[in-house]
Image (cartoon, rainbow over all chains, first blue to last red; front, side):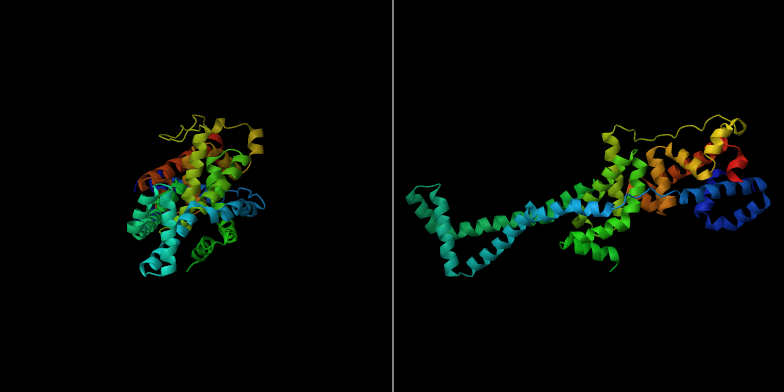
Length: 165
Length: 188
């Protein structure tokens, strides 16, 4: 067997040559030059695995967590949570409207009339309110729910992935 | 359910104090990675804090498709690279520097040898001169006992490239130590 190359020695020490292990061990036993070279690499491996610890700054974990507190509490008001809250409210209102609970329907109609009066004259507002108020409210709520769902399923994973980049 | 799963679940349920457990558990790993990609103690502290802040923000995106150590190592690596880019430090490593021509018998003078009289110190000096990506591959493999696959995942490199980095870095270290110091002073 020829002398072992640097690559063969490293592969042997890394355990990448299980099928040739006995052959290589036998060669190392009989070849002084290869044995010395293997010993040098062994020493190098041991030293690399025992590299001195980087001094960890005392109290580091406490400082990290303290830095998170404002972020964690601010999290209550993040866009994520607001959108989710709007979606939940939207789903609740839509359900109530769909089952036809009169107080909510009346309140919804009143809100819709109020909003539409900002945009249309009285006659137009009354016509729209009479014909479109419930479907419009339902549509608006559906849009909010749709946006929230899209945010949760598509945009949020993209934001999370961006954090890792 | 392993510990990490329970801790991540607690943090995601709003218990941000539980995040401290993850910081304590992975501080050493993050510190090793960051120290290979930064030069001053102040930078190291800042980058380490940024790593954990990013991990906290991105925690809901962690789906346990890999080990938590691999996931946070990726964040540490990317944050460290961003830091190097901001500092204008070279990142690409097409080739390692050549081994010095100096022969063993012309090694450093005795005073220098006396000061750096143990292999650990000498080796750390030599490792510090390697390009950051080589330093990091050595650290992850030998110190953190990551597999080739895990290192490839963290550093976004083909596995063959990881093996090649490790092989070339170790060969270079061995040759540099032999060329700078008398053989018997190091290995015997």
